[in-house]
Length: 119
Image (tube, rainbow, N blue to C red):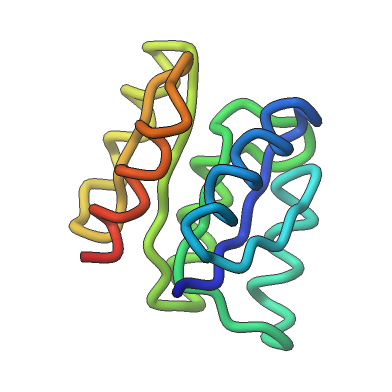
């Protein structure tokens, strides 16, 4: 199973996504914002297969986080947002390594999106 780095400033979303992905057998490391997540990627102490991040976060937004993280690693990235304009911004990261999911999503939608990224 995959090692997943999850970055979201909303505790309820973090908990739901973490539980959904752990139910599929993945190991999930949770961070509260983009800056903390980038520290995990750049620190290199742990290697991650997938970065799941909200687009709209304080300190370092998800798109910038993804851009910077992709320079350091062969991560796959799943960007989440409830705002269409934010998802449009995310489309600038066109790559087979990057996917987007719109909020609200079901837990099965999240699980399927991660499975597809890993396939």
